[in-house]
Image (cartoon, rainbow, N blue to C red; front, side, top):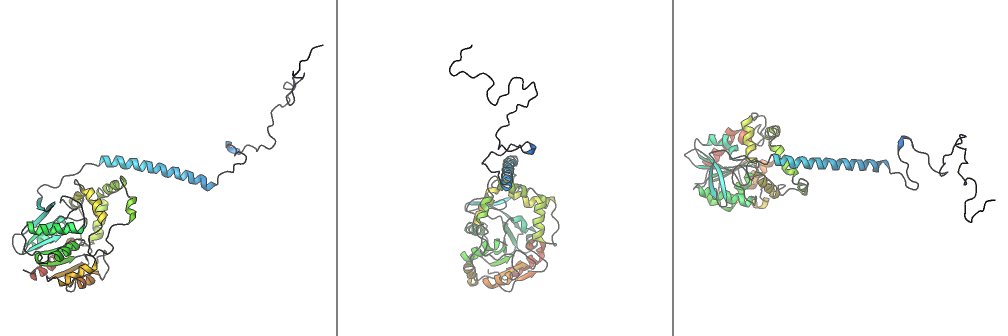
Amino acid sequence: MTDRHDGAAPDGPPPNHPAPGDAAAGVRTEDPGPADAPPEPPGGDAPVPAGRPRRPWWRRWGRRLGLAVLALAVATTMFSFIYNAATAGRVRPPAGLTYVRTGDLLTRYRAWGTGGSPVVLVHGAAESADTWQPVAELLARDHRVYALDLNGAGYTSRRAPYDLDHQTRQLLAFIDALGLRRPVLVGHSSGAATVADAALRSPDRVGGLMFLDGDALSTGAGPPSAARYLIIPPYRTTLLRLGVRSDWLIRTIYSAQCGPGCARLDAAGVEEWRRPFQVAGAESGIWGMLRYGVPGLPPGRLTGLRSVGVPKAVVYGAEDHVFAKDSAAQTARRIGAPEPTLIPGARHLTLISAPSQVARAVEDLAARRTP
């Protein structure tokens, strides 16, 4: 007889364990597990724990989409930084440019002709003094013609603020610096506001006033909406440089504004439009100008030109899509000018597409110039 100690396991196999020899006899000995365990789903996916509902399909796809957007944002940002670093070099202005000091700016300008009464040509947005060359060459037969690069454009030194007040003071200082007596002022597009403001401030220094494809109004031309904050560094720099470097984009915009009367830009023409946007300080000037918006005057102030005793003229391209069809007539009435001149078939860049008609209109105005 064998003694049994208290607490010792009883003889024989424990409950729920196979007896010796069962395995040899081929008896299945797997633990069946909990009776309510769910079957393993096909495909090898792990089962959803009990009490935890499976995520809806839209949440799963939303998570995947969010990850894809995040990856795209990271890749875009990396590309932007790399591209901006690779294109950081600035080009030099062309050789032989002419400058004059106008207050706090070093103003670049061009001059044509040696005799006759003076005419000063003021460009619009994204333009420069070079844009006037076709008209200026025709006027130079009988006039001394000048065109300047406004602050923020062309090859003039750039200095904030980029607003109408600063440009007007620059224009009046330019007239004084060159010793011009009562020149005829011609403003194209947004340049119309600059010549209008100059005539309102100092009518005794102006001999005549022409609005060319411009109404000089601030209506709808103020600072851009808050959407501009969506285009932030480094992306805005990348977008600007991609656009400036695109021959196709420059030609497309030029063709849309100039119309069928203009020949296709050749390589030299594309470079003439592109180069002012690639010189040192050009990009900061562009962002500064965007903050201030397109220069313009309120209607009430603009009607003050009616009492300014200088001859006036309004000239528009008949197919100018930048303004409403009746804009030319309304502008002429607003400033006290005669009926406007509409150039058939011309769009917004009449100074390029119809230089002969524009030059003839300027000559007619200069013949009525206040001496």
